[in-house]
Amino acid sequence: MSKNNILISVLLLLMLTSGIFLWMGFKDLNDQRKELNNEKDDLDQVRKDLKSKLIETDSLLNIQKTITDKIVKEIPQGNPADSLHKLIFKYKKNAESVNKIVDDPEKLALQFEKDGFNALINNQFTIALDKFMKAEKASPSFHMAYEISRLLKSEKANLENPAIQRKIKKQIIDKYSWRAPVDLLKKLRAQIKE
Image (cartoon, rainbow, N blue to C red; front, side):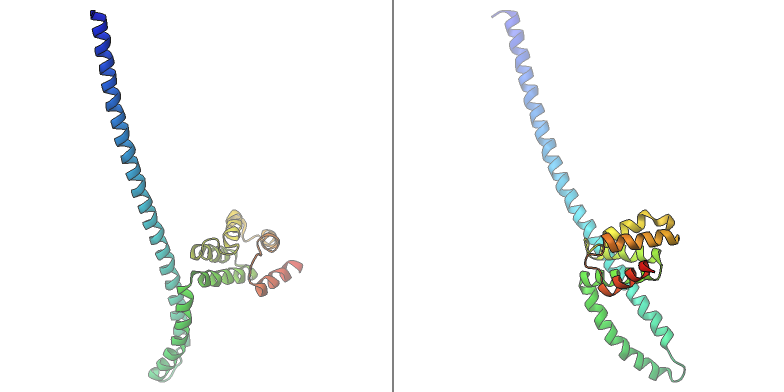
């Protein structure tokens, strides 16, 4: 064998060896990538779970604050013990119905949706935006909550302008009224006709 043939054989052997090492390295990198993707998916799920719990907690705190505010307003003068017993009985019934709503994300979303439509009727567009966003968070893809909140966000800088308010109400009636509360939708339609 000549020196050239030996040199070529050695080079081919080195290239083959380096190719094997590269292939093994790529295989290890691919395995590590798959493992990182699995960990990312796990972290995404934890994030979604935490977000859901945060939304639920926020809703409970809002409901608790509303009830507390009502209790404070309704405490009459006179014997505090009698007043307290009456209020406890009254709000115990309310608390049971609130717990039923909170346990069902769709009922919670429906309540936020109704609050959003009432805010629109009262020309409180910033509050309406907040309520429709909460409806979407409570139950993603609930009725048209996402679309309405997106519409309100797009006009956020002009929500106090009566012409913009009328335009938004008309768009909601024309495009985003699917499964909206019928009684509230009628009130909104009546405002557009005025």
